[in-house]
Amino acid sequence: MGFFSRTPATPLAGVDVVLADLDGVVYAGAGAIPHAIDSLRQVERSLRLGYITNNASRTDASVAAHLTELGLTVAPDEVVTSPQAAMRLLGDTVAPGSTILVVGGEGLVVEAEKAGYVVTRSAEDAPSAVVQGFAPDVSWTQLAEAAFALKVPEDEGGIPWIATNTDWTIPQSRGIAPGNGTLVSAVHTAVGRLATVAGKPEVPIFHEAIARFSARKPLFIGDRLDTDILGANRAGIDSALVITGVDRPKHVLAAPTGSQPTYILGDLRELHEPYPQTKVKDGITSVGDAAVRIDGVDVVIVSEGSRPIDLLRAGAAAIWATGRAIYGFDVPERLYADTFFRP
Image (tube, rainbow, N blue to C red; front, top):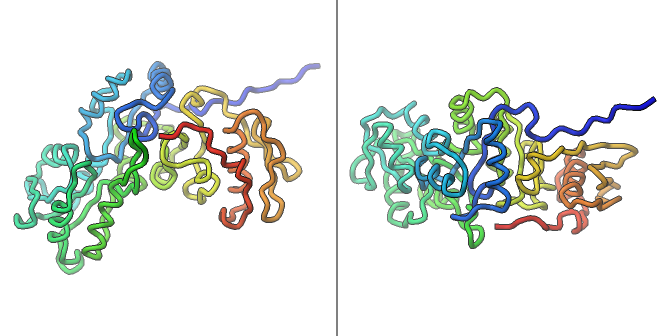
């Protein structure tokens, strides 16, 4: 008498729309991340594929053109940007036709004008709101104008302040660089106010994407726990963290409850591979042939296994299951060895 052994499903099983972040997932700077394009082209053949980006420096059309140059097939309306989400938020409080002060680049200016707003760069023009997004050429002058416009607290009659996103860093071809969060923080330090955030990890940008693609069971792919994965969890959708961008294995092990992904991927090829089940027996957590156990404050590697990604998955599952913070453990360096692509 034989027995039935079911091969584990891939992360794409049952998914109707794949939503992918860009920086750190598809590309770093202008260049594609290894295996990303071929893997996403494979997705294109059977599923709807859209892109969500917190990067406010470029228009949806320019992003679509860049992705097309890299070998994908992308129309502008398949790119959901944080400036688009910011305009949806702004429309709730500031009427089209109003003047708004924009800190940022073309991606934000174009969306503001498409939404019917008059764009200024000067607080002297009495703007009705400040909208701030990332651009490589944002200067002290732009930050100062924002601070001047926001000097009165909103609860005392001051104008709204919307940030497209607050990512602290952004992957570039030469490494990790400061992101919009650092620029927003500079204005916050000057005026003592907090911005309303449109992009990840807040849910407006996810709701926009789900509605645009009529998604019933989307999968979101990102490279950051604090924006991509936290935002997907808040929006109630499955997520995959790919270790090709900002967050590395040590960050995965330390992920708090709200930022733990559904799947952990070494690169995007693993979207199409059976995702191994996590098994727990006799206090040992195993994924594939990798196994880890928790012994008091010690995280013990029982078996390194044949794949570093499975060892990371096992370690993460074991640590996360305790509900305890990472600093309460003695973690062997081998568990968070970084053998994955680094931008």
